[in-house]
Length: 431
Image (cartoon, rainbow, N blue to C red):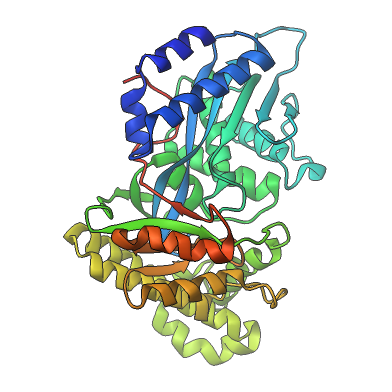
């Protein structure tokens, strides 16, 4: 289907139901213009070459802060903020090497020659590394790859705490999956490919929660006891009907130099596990840990002990929060959100970087929110932490006042309401 036909279909409402499902209460007209805009950009940059359309959501972590990398449990949701793409498959030629190209709004184009899939050390920390790494993961699993050009734009802003990197990884995996593999790879397999690329090629240690939430869609609980086959359970959650607006607040701050802080969390947790004769904390007994604290303190330090304490309690808390959602007990659920945030602040210690103690924007956002709520709703550090966003549940009748209150300190647009996206990442479908 040509670009012109695609635009006509969108203008005539043939994707309207899909937009309503993905973007929930947001205006379809905004998204109609957004999608036709990326198609026109593709037509201008690549030509009218019958593009295919893809969408990959960001994610919000609801509970399980820094538990996934030690094979714990998490509760997460895909959200309406997404990265979208108009994509054309390169014409095969015996003379050409396969090149994957991403032309992203606001960024220089990325072109990766896929004739070599070995890690390139100089690419660490770049989109090039993610592209090459995901292609390598597909080939290792017996899949096929090829060249393509994708024009993209994203509402999952970099550093927003909604995992722009995972959204991009799953987008790239979905493109390879649909264009060259007839959709044979499952969402969980695509998630593992994204994680492998991020860990090995990009150079950032991460668990599997972000990629899984982006790939699967909806609210899900994930148990990573078996990392090769994580147990995923859909969970029904309707915060709007319960009278709350879920949102994130961007407190500012740059994640660029925080990799050592992120890396230290799994390293210290695994050091505790090693002292107990295991690889990860999930494979240890909490009572054995408590008995071994004196020895662990000497070997790994007090912060590692505190982070392990967080892991055990947070892992249990996910189960409780899932039960609360199933029972429709929003107040019990919100109390667990508060406890999760308190544990992250005091024990996990990922609210500010110990290397930059004068920069505590996340702490400030939490303090101001607590002052505003005065016992209502809940707030917590969101995602990896150290900089960026907090997550809040604000009584909907007070949400407009909250936005005005927080924008005084963090600027216009700093408060971003979220809605759950029930659909997985992948190719956009008509109604």
